[in-house]
Amino acid sequence: MVAKVINDVKQNRGFYIWMAFLLAVFGVAGVAAILVWTRGLEVTGLSNEVPWGLWITVDLSAVALGSGSFAVAGLVYLFGAKRFAAVSRVALLIGFLADTGTALVLLLDLGRPDNFYHPIIYWNTKSLLWVITWSVILYITILLIELAPVLTESKLFARWPIVHRIGEEIHKATPVAAFMGVVISIIHLSATGATYGILRGRPVWFDPAMPVIFLVSGIFAGISFLIMVIVVTSWVMRRRLVDPNLLDQLARIAGWVGVTCGIIRVIDLSANHYFSYKPFLGESINLLYNMTPYSLALTLGEFAFGLIIPLAIFFNPTVRVRFRNLVLAGVGATTGLLLCRWNVTLTGLVATVSYSPSAPSINFFSYFPTWVEWAAVAGVLAYAGMVYTLAVRFLPIFGAEGEEEETELAAERHHAPVVAA
Image (cartoon, rainbow, N blue to C red; front, side):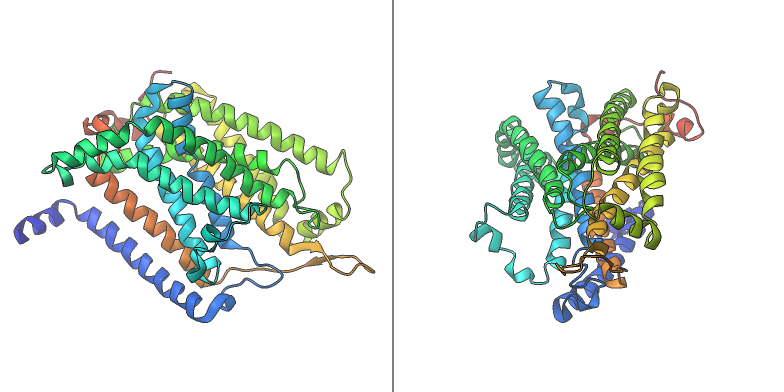
C-alpha cells in the first residue's frame, strides 16, 4: 500500500505540489477566519460608512460566474439542445463551488456565523437579502441532487451496485431539478441587482435596470468562464475533455448574450446620465472620477477588456477556433464582471449623500481591504481549486469524452486550429 502511494506521488508530482500549495493557502485563510471570529470586523477595512467591500464583491462575482450551470441546464432541458449535456456536469460543479464559496465568505462577512440559521427560521419575505439567502440554500440543494449521479458513478462506489441504482433513480429527477434551478438562479441574480436598484437614498445605486444588468452580465460571464475552465483543464490534463465544436457553439451563444448585455448597459448609462436627472448623481460621479479610478475601471475595465475584446473573439470564426483566444475571452469577461461588481458595490458607499436634511452634500469615505480580507478570498479560491481538482481526477465530470486522448491539443498550443472555421 505504501509503495503504491509512493509510486503515485512520483507519477503525479505536479498534482501533489498543487494540492499542497492550495492547502497552505487554505491554512492562512483559516488564521484570517479565526481573527475575524475572535476580534470581529475591526481587523478588516470595513466601517460603519463602508460596511460592504471586497467580500461582497467576491460573493456577487462568484454567483455570476457560477451561472453557467443554469445557462447550460436551460439549453439542455428547456431548449432541447441535448448536445450541451456533455458540459453540464462541469457546469454544475462550477455552480456548486461558486455558491458554496459564497456561503463561506458570508460566514465571515456576517460577523456572527453562529446566527446563520436565522433566515431559515425567521422569515422576512419583504427583504431581498432574505430572498437571496433562500435562493443560495435552494440552489445548492438542487445542485447536490443534479451532481449525485456523478458521485454514484465514480469508482469509489464500484463495489456497491445499489449505490449506482440510487444514483439512477436520482438522475430521473434531473429535468425537474434543472427547471427549478433555472428559475431560482434567475431570481437569485436578479435579486442581487435589485438590492442596489431600489435604494433611493443612494444616487449611484438607484437604478431600476440593475436586476436585468446583473442577470444578463452574469450569464455572459458565466458561459465565458465555463469555456475558459474547460480549455485550461484540457491543457493541464493533455487530452480532449469536450468536443471543440461544442465549445465553438457555446462561444457564439456567449457572444450574443454579450451583445445583449452591452446594449442594455449603454442604454442604461445613457438614460441615467444624459436623458434624465437624479439629484446628486452628477456630483457623486464627479467625486468618484476625482477620488477613485472609477472612470478607468468603467471604460477600459468593464467595456474594453470585459466586453469588446471577448465579443471580438466570439464573433470571429478564425479567431475563436484557437483555444488560447477562448481563454483570453474568458479572462476578459471575468475581469469585466469583477470590475462591474466592484464598481457597483463601492460606488454607493464611498460617494454618498450626507444625512443632514438642512445641508445635504456628497461625502467620500475611503476603503482599502486588509490582508485578512485578501487571505479569506484566497482561501475560498483555494477551496474551489481543491474540490475542482479532486473532482476532475477522481469523478466522471467530463464523461466518456474525457477519456479520449487529445493529440491535437499540443498543436493548438503552437497556434494550430483544432476546429474547422
